[in-house]
Image (cartoon, rainbow, N blue to C red; front, top):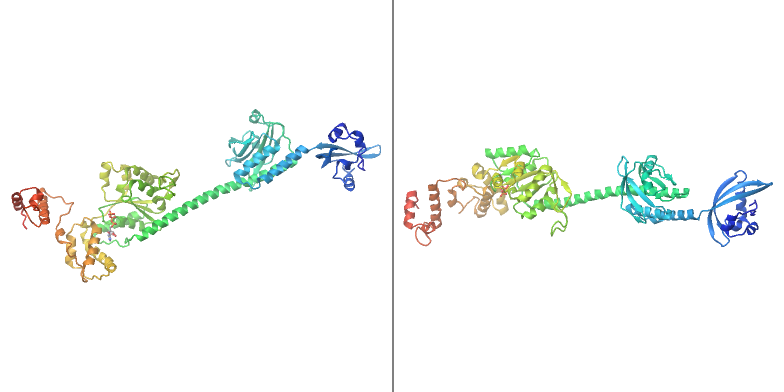
Length: 593
Ligand SMILES: Nc1ncnc2c1ncn2[C@@H]1O[C@H](COP(=O)(O)OP(=O)(O)OP(=O)(O)O)[C@@H](O)[C@H]1O
């Protein structure tokens, strides 16, 4: 064409593509096929000549049938016989434009998607838009960047299972090293891909905010893979977005983890709170361990010694001797005193419930487990657990208990997650554990683990010198509660109490005093009908000769039947002997009314 826009020559291909004959062309102006031009804009363009002799433009051309075709025009300035001409080579770029349009639409299609969904949509849309064989988005599995894991993988018209692979020798390796896009139009330098029939490759680095290459976006093609600058730019933008999504994913994982931790803590606090509220309702008087007997002082010294350590403590002794009181004292003067002391009475729960009480359970672990529940070990984390009546723990559960003692870990019932706790253990029992071990009811290994620091709680009958103090203590405790002011505790009362052998120990004494406070009519403590028959009774644990035992038993029966020897309700009948035999036996044993 010339400077006026007149077409002076058109070749065969132009005629074919535009649908005009050569003659028709020669009578046409450039504006007939390029409707974007006005006379002045054509002049503007022409002004670039002759300073620039060749340049490129993108525009659209119309065919004779009215189709608008996107074109790339390579303009060339020539002078011929004193005339200036522009020779344009026109390239139909419909296909490229179509792809670009599709690629642009990916940005729109994926704006709403996040995380994994974004990656999936991305590879699917890219594969379809560019007509490549497969597309992947990957992430490095470690800081060394030797392996990549796909976050989404699309091939053969569908999403594939994610894979992980070594980067060495793959084109992805080059991207990770250079942090730049890498394009192989028709010659992928990798045997593996060749085997797969891959010839074209283009990959883009996925770079984190800190400038690190954390993965890539890669396209593989079984045909030559030509790609325009614009397409490269779009793909780069998509890779940038992928980087944000990878970071969002990582942040999400952290967030979910943190949320779970918060949930766990919340559960624990709630459970701890409920537990502590129950505990507050239970009355404690551990501040006051009443004693001045030397023997008991030694016990208290032991309590002090062991409290400072984290050692497991086993408190042994008869019922009612103050084992729980001592256990609480250990906790209260230990470094864990500001964390809870969590108690569980192993005798008060059915065997199947002890496990879930101790270790907690997951939702649905058994019928009725409608919610996840933390166990007492979790509640006691950082504090102390008091396992009362440890001798009652079913043998099946003892191994699990041993594991907590040894490793500090366990799983919730129905759960697989191992929970680690830092709990100090205090166990108490009135059973002879050694005997339980020999008889196979208690695991030896658990016994040795528990028996690290045994403390023997002394029976009251072995420290009768404490009785006056204890009586005073309980009188002062119950007097105000019962609206009584008892000032005087007669020596005779104390003496009577001291002659009794107290099988129920301090708990029994406490009950007797409470009752005495109730029945005392004056400011003087009265035992009323409690003592007479029992004061002289022998200790149950005392071993007697057969003769002494016979005497004691006959006396007991005689007392029961008001000393009637013969008759239906007489002692002889109960003892299964003739009245005369009983009388002579009484005589021999020196039994008189
Ligand atoms: N030294 C003491 N001073 C004051 N009160 C005491 C003392 N020892 C025990 N008691 C009281 O006696 C009662 C029984 O004590 P505790 O429950 O500690 O005994 P235990 O040995 O754990 O009993 P069991 O084996 O039956 O569980 C509690 O009311 C406790 O407060």
